[in-house]
Image 1: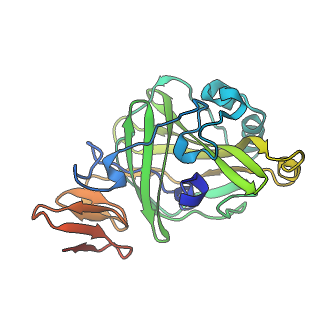
Image 2: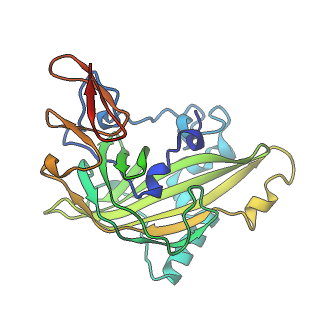
Length: 284
């Protein structure tokens, strides 16, 4: 199923980022984002995982963006970084292989705002405020996943994780159908710093830009390459690492394990349980 259909980026709308317990939460028989089952299959080896790729058997631009240096140096990313700097935001993209520890559960307070948005997929507008939320984050084999919940819903996203031990960048690459004849290939990059003492995520910023297009017919993407170009940069308040699960408002807690709305699992009594949209646990 394509990324735009399952709304992988819905978490960005509410500044949701993945939340995880130390061991990524959940249990072996649950169906939960907290299980840290990060999708990584990429049949055509083009850097866009199959779950997020409109054409998983056809490598976009011959696999050019499987090399993240090409993502960082793409015209679209360089343009949005320039816009961010003009707005007073410096975003340093990481490419190192020593990312900080992003495992944990985090609370996001109301705050932050969209500094610039052009043709946002999720309807964000320049100057808009971002809402509070909670998230589970985990890491696995060079990838990071964020599963979170807020007053408006829940969502999940994953990507390649890079860093220098303190700062990180999570690269999520996906395709998005602009029309039946035009597909955009997009990079959404989360960036931040992990405080070594508190574990809080600070200096959090997101940049989103188009890497390229697939014209099904000649000229079908022309409008999206100009006035329809997708670009965004925004920031939120620090993400506070949670130590007391009783502080959580938008996720369910059962036997010291955390679940987002829609998650299912077996409890200690072997009952089938579900976290409802009202953040209630229903078991039978």
